[in-house]
Amino acid sequence: MPHRSAEPLAWLAFSAGGVLAAVFAPVVLFLAGLALPLGWISADHAHLDDVLSHLLTRIVLLGICVAALFHFAHRFRYTLYDGLQLARYGTVITAGCYGLAMLGSAAAAAVLLLNR
Image (cartoon, rainbow, N blue to C red; front, side, top):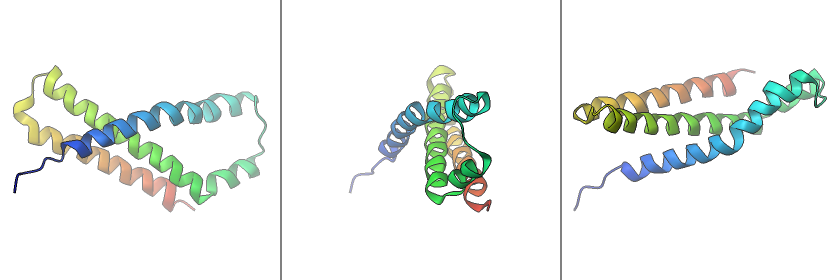
């Protein structure tokens, strides 16, 4: 039986993370960073707390965080491989990049799902 690479899964995580980060992150940043603080949209604190405490909202935010972290890990891995010509350290780079993405994902899950 031929050896199968996990490379397609890495590219899947890369493309999914890029799409989710490109579509949803600017919306979240605009709403939380500009529209609410500047008063362009009105939301009282109780309503905003209700929205952010809803499980579905937290799961969507977690998905955005996880996808963006794995997108970054894959991009940074290939930057180190090709850009800095460090392909000889491939195993260490791969474990470090994706390991940090998993740790960041676990931290995001802890913050988003365990606080309440």
